[in-house]
Picture (cartoon, protein in one colour):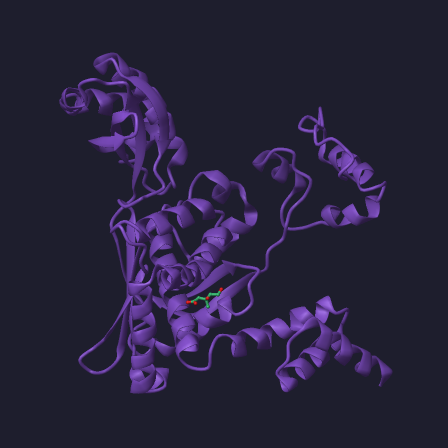
Length: 423
Ligand code: MEV
């Protein structure tokens, strides 16, 4: 492909079949390789074409169910979309170990979404700030008019904040529209409001309006979950102590905190993806929130209760929606919401936070005891067997050999496969 230009005039306007033809030519006329993209799946190719530009197919990600979860007293099955082995097993296992203490208890700060309007070139930023704050009612009227349906449903502008942000070129005025977007993630609603409000702010203040976009640091949409794991469900007081020490490292060291939070997001992003929500928005928000104190830190906190049990809490921003965007039109996302029984963004957020906490418990426990590789490689062995060429029944037989010898590598899998085929 390297000797062809990446300019493909007309590609966007072509039908999906034509796009596949163009791509096949680029692959040296190998249309066969692309038949993979043409297999029937749960999502209509026409829909793919409407969701993104230049669509050629779908990239399927495994979808599984986390069992054993109890969230705010409700038993539930949680759909998770992930390509990583061990992720769902860890949630199932962690959730099972805190069932005796009632599972996960959550709280939700609300569905307030922030949109930013950047105002530049002001010689009197404080004066501009005071001017804008005095005209909140007029700003609310513009926002209400922009999205009357949201206002009718009880959402809309809740407050404005005007921040003075010292930047290299001088002080910038940044106006935050704080909007209750109810059951929507809200990006479209608040971005439109910001675009409508910006020229009016410019007229009032003489500023040059520039960026008008939501903030993914959604700290008005914080969701929390907590759970207590009885010491005897974890492996005793030594394991509780080891897990606490492991968690402490994430508080003290950003190098560990990044990995600690990555593990949390293994669970969070899998629920976000399964429900057709925006994984990047959630990831950006979570990591920005984790750094809000000035030092990047963990999204969870762990303590020993007076009874010697392990109590965990998680707090993170979750801009999730159950209406609008891909969630509304993607049939698998709709099905996942149905399985979850999530009839509001609030419910979805609470469940997602609980999964993040469960995931972190599982990783910490594994790391503080056997290490992560034992469980991970046990599952991963099958993938390695497939990579080495095993098919059908051979996959589990080769994987079993790898597990028995404790060496999970492609070279070992090839050897095991050759031995198996030789009989
Ligand atoms: C791997 O995907 C996630 C972990 O690294 C998380 C952690 O270290 O806490 C196991």
